[in-house]
Image (tube, rainbow over all chains, first blue to last red; front, side):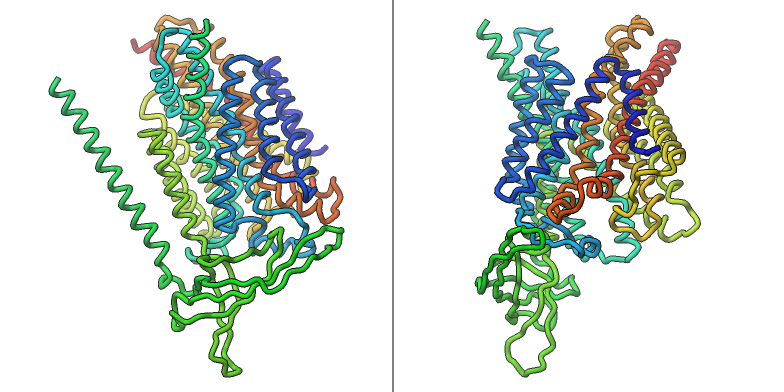
Amino acid sequence: MNTLVLLTGILFILMVLIGGRKGIRSFIALFLNFVVLLFTIFIMLDPTADPIILTIIASTAISFITLFYISEVNSTTKTAFISTVITIVILIFFIMYVTEKAMIQGFGEEEIGELYIFDLYIGVDFVKIGTAMIIMSAIGAITDITISIASPMREIFHHHPSMSRRDLFQSGLSIGRDILGTNSNTLFFAFFGGYLALLIWFKDLSYSLGEIVNSKVFTAEILTILCAGIGIALAIPITSWITSYFLVKRREKN
Amino acid sequence: METIVNKIKKITYKQYMLYSILALCCAVSVFFVYHNYSFYERTIAKVTESNLEHSEEILGRNNNQDYLFIQQIVAEIKNGNEKGQNIHLTNEYSASGAYDQEYHAGDEIFVSIDENTAGNTELTGAILDVKRDKYIVIVAWIFIFTLLIVGKKQGLYSIISLAVNIALISYALDVYIHTSNISLLWICGISAILFTGITLLLVNGVNEKTYAAIVATLLGTFLSLFITYLVIMLTSANGLRFEGMGFLTRPPYVVFIAGLFIGSLGAVMDVAVTMSSSLFSLYEKNNTISVQALKTSGIEIGKDIMGTMTNILFFAYISGSIPTLILYLKNGSLLTYTFSINLSLELTRALAGGIGIVITIPIGLYTALFFVNRKRKRL
């Protein structure tokens, strides 16, 4: 039997056993997100399609599925959705600038040996593809932090309906601070796990510190970690502001 | 009243000190990476002039259209015996830039200098690589300041725990490489315990909530690893393409399992902390809350985080393959081949991490209940 099939089956059973109906929805959302990602990659093969615009559309679709399909369409998921999209758009331009400046696009010396059979002149813009890669690695974490802030903020507002926008914003920030550490850790460890082979490689081949910090592969991976961390941190004030703005606006309307 | 004023003064003074020290460190380190040429043995040159000499349209093997450019570069050598002299370089680059790039005035590059045999007065050479250290330092500072401004104290703790974890992982790998008889899995197991302890105590503080989270994390990680290991054994790794793994100097299987272990640790910690913090806060709000009520709320919280948490790992792993997938597909590789060779291991990691996340929900719930009950009995 195929390992992946059995693992997928186990994950599905666990999600159903523990999550019930919501577990099933979470599993389907995971599958749908995978389809969106693959679909995006296929469109990226077309050199006339701009990978940046594609990434923004794909991120919107992914956060749409994650927020609205698993939970439901309500004011919390709506503000979380808006906050995710805004964070992604701000982040994408920063990352593109960094990728272009540090020239970390494409493949490094250490990877190229295995890829020599391929034609590298394939007409797509690797700076933009690299940017898309970094953004996509962080999209899950950013969606998670926006919903984790927006949801308790609504609870607080519900219990203290006369709160001012400034106080609400401050409470959003403080919720965000509490989850910042564990949320960024999730991503950092995921990256560490993925980079383990590379780290052993550097140590086994006794690279000097100077060679490591200037190599394309290492720089690309460190910058991915840092940019994802910046994105998570930025999502906190953005979500707090947007959620407090909408909650207070709705109160004034009534 | 006076004490409060003093307290505020004290805090702001402390913060003022912290920020000035950080600003100083930032300025010194940025200045350093812009002037550290003499620390490198490899020759560094700074591009002063670049001229496009030639451009052509090319059609690749699979009808991929691209553009090739050749530029002539004059650069000033920044270190070594030829310091201060100009060097002439030729750079060939493509519009797509998978393994090359255009250079502009101001870019710093590592070069090799050709031996002067023809008696030319001009130095010539070849471009080896880009000097990237300054970008790491600058972005690292942006990261540090963003986390501090947004996260304040918690931001500081996240930065410290990231730094400690990097140091720990680097040390653990040193131990692994220099002692041939210790298995990587043992090293990762011990590191996992240290990672969990250090990170959770730093991020979550020294209290019962943290102890519950540490116990739940360790149980969850080891159980999910055991399940994954068992599945791989039972299916004899059918469908896993280890040849798709890059950077191998060691047996791929061990490196893969170790990476999987560390990779899911962060997510499992997150779930364990969420479960224990929320159950403890429910208990603190209402000391007489029944075990049944705690269980129901715990499962509800678990259901809420399950979807987004599995998503985090999923995207963190799969997205890394985007450039390679595009390269394969653009070269006309078969879809099934491309996916199985590039995604089978990443998907396994994501699935194993997902199993870890989901399984930690009940584990976290019962561990937190155990600690809550213990606290209740003591009262």
